[in-house]
Image (tube, rainbow, N blue to C red; front, side, top):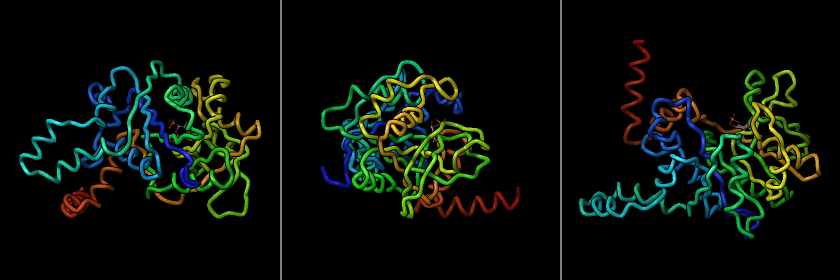
Length: 296
Ligand code: G1P
């Protein structure tokens, strides 16, 4: 185990109904909706693999088998593409199955994010001293914050989360950190955490942004929490419990961009952002958008 890669397992909670994408999510899990041509969950799996994960545990619900299926090889399709000389497409099709080893855990009741993460405990082995949790609704850009978080865990131990500095009027949608300076530009010590506080009661404007590197101790804490914000078992409350019991928790304040793939408005922004950078679709889309907006 290298000092900058203290985890090998990444957990991706993907059991939700995707109600904000109905009616599409009657048939297609929201995690498979394409950002240009690649499902959001592949972008998140790529990030986990780049940061050193070799195993992805997708927490899913009955009826969402397509999410794990996406990571399985498709030999017939690969053969057809190979016979037709479509090497570029073949590489795309093989990409997800080659990223990391994918397993599933089933969450059969929607009891909250803390409960979803707890469902993955049975997939862990003795080697998993820490796990990464990546929320597939959140794209954190540029990629690489998990690698920095792993460095911070190697230095301070305990758990490390990613924070964004959010305008106070938006803070009540997030888990919010109470932080202390430790003389580092991008790292702060966390002395408390609260899920979805009212704006005037939030301990700071530093919010959890869907990337967690959690000491295994979190699974014991998850068994001791009771329903919190929204009546759900909150991951935030398990982390707050760890902090209260003296477990070290730090945040890496990420100054990059982010997209929220969890609703159509945020998803469209991400798709346009990625498409504008795409050599095949970007130039044409830019020209069309300029005309479309100019004449709106
Ligand atoms: C979840 C977490 C919250 C975090 C947010 C980031 O909330 O509970 O602490 O800040 O993700 O996107 P949700 O967006 O699922 O309500």
